[in-house]
Length: 274
Image (cartoon, rainbow, N blue to C red; front, side):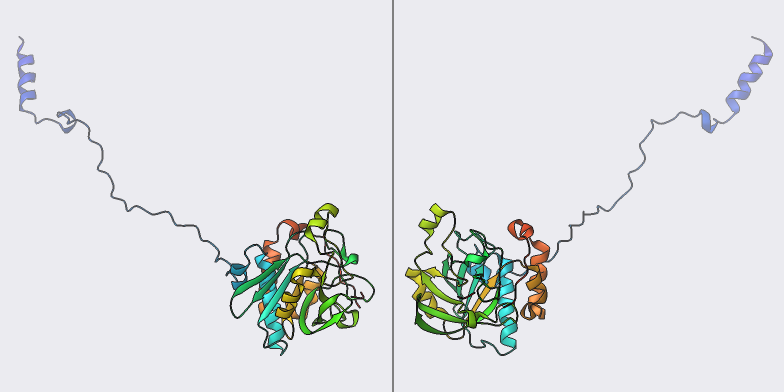
């Protein structure tokens, strides 16, 4: 071996190992970074609309209509009308005549006393009522809030007078003889054959078999509320525009579905013989 090669080998043996030439350890994964788990935030839900006590008593009724009826009653009482009322009747004329659409509530005992069919006026429509009036001779039903008066025996038997509280909407009820009474034509079995219940001249007529019990519950200062989604009435009624009633109206407008959403609004005419 040549001297030069011996010299190079000797020098190489004396040099420290270079960092880049040293033996490498097996590659290691970087240490994991400690993280704090973040829980997914729950979706924010709108506060549910409070359930009216009337809805608990009558789950088959439209809760929005019941809230509106109660609010209108409270507005009337705030104005000194029917302050001692213990009972409230609600009629939902947006329902077909062959379905129960009259509910009678005992407000003190918190009970539903009656759930019944009820007739509308001949001039209001066939199975579905779509037209309403305050005009004498129209033979149409009237909307709005009524406070009941006394009873009497008339051509339709035992009857209940009703005083309309809404000017231009139902305040002609006494003059028109719009009263609650029994009638043989309020017969669901016969109505099924005809495709509608028998009709009145504008009165909320009920089955003869239950007329007297219902009338006795509602006489002398109780409330009757008749509803249909008539936008003109909803907009101008003083009893539907006090603070409590406005909240109920907002619920109806926001959540209107089904028949309420597609019902064609009608204007309540001013001024039917019972």
